[in-house]
Image 1 (cartoon, rainbow, N blue to C red):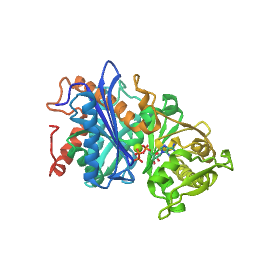
Image 2 (cartoon, helix red, strand yellow; image 1 turned 90 degrees about the vertical axis):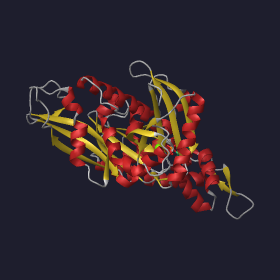
Image 3 (cartoon, rainbow, N blue to C red; image 1 turned 180 degrees about the horizontal axis):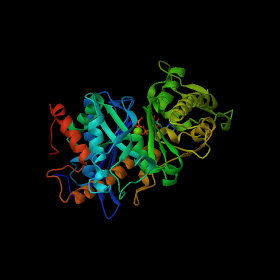
Image 4 (tube, helix red, strand yellow; image 1 turned 60 degrees about the vertical axis):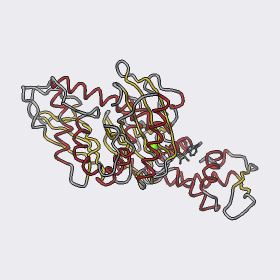
Length: 426
Ligand SMILES: Nc1ncnc2c1ncn2[C@@H]1O[C@H](COP(=O)(O)OP(=O)(O)OP(=O)(O)O)[C@@H](O)[C@H]1O
Ligand SMILES: [Mg+2]
């Protein structure tokens, strides 16, 4: 059994698997106990492509935090992304609400279950149902209808689903490492939990998580999520461009990118050279650093144009008050924030996790936004679950720490996943 009060986040990324272990202390606070990061070899463009390689890496990462902390880790919240993720903004009547003459918090807590049941098809899995706004007696734009005297209430929800195959494979990979999945979190939504400010969410903002395999986007307006998307381009493509252009092996290209790349070639001196290994040649290639940066700028331009297309889809019309927060490992490429600013025509900043209080320095970098955000999300989920139990008067017997949505989710996927797994978590 997992120690009481422990929270674990696993970010199954394309380049790294990151596990963070913490303990809930006081209201909304986490004591960080351990963190481990191991290379990820089974994930392509955010999807698990090799189950064995992924569960071995997850196991290694979790064993590492177990060793560091001396704690038992039995369950975790896990991030999900990839081209299989889709969203829909829809309206549903809350026919169950207002039975006591007014709308209660319990009525609102049922949205997840009631809307899930209505929209999930056989080949899709529910990831989130996020309330955007409500309409009461025909008046829309209501942020919180709790306490209003009406039975005519509708919810406008942002519903995020993933393909059953991809989601089950991700969950199966983690479970085969002996970890029960307490809940899934859309990766850029997690990143936003660790980096976006409340005023950015209110005024209109996008989190753009530039990872290795994907660039994930979530857009907020009026405090709520209105749009999500995943572009299958990330740091991998920047490195691959170096490989293809100069015939460089991948690791050598990655090293050169991390040391010398910038998307602002004209800030680099003309006489500065870099040495590049080339396949099949003993002597390295001498290359003006500016050429390397020009190549990176081309890729960055293309990616920023793809981001602009997605933001327009989300309703962005060039409003200069709209904020874009770029995060993820690739957001640390020098110059990328300025280039994005020029393409998008709005303010852009690089976001790194700055909460919850007590967050160690080692986790305050853009590559950790998703992992830290999963912890913040998990903390909120557990608080909401505890609140829902309190309102119901009693806890569901045997309910998981992952909340009702995930308890039901797992009832649906467990039978598919149990084959061949060593279930040391239960
Ligand atoms: N200074 C830098 N300049 C350019 N790229 C960088 C820099 N630092 C990290 N990266 C790139 O960031 C990427 C890793 O970022 P991150 O850890 O956020 O990805 P991930 O979470 O593993 O992938 P994904 O979220 O796409 O599944 C790698 O492609 C790496 O080359
Ligand atoms: Mg990532």
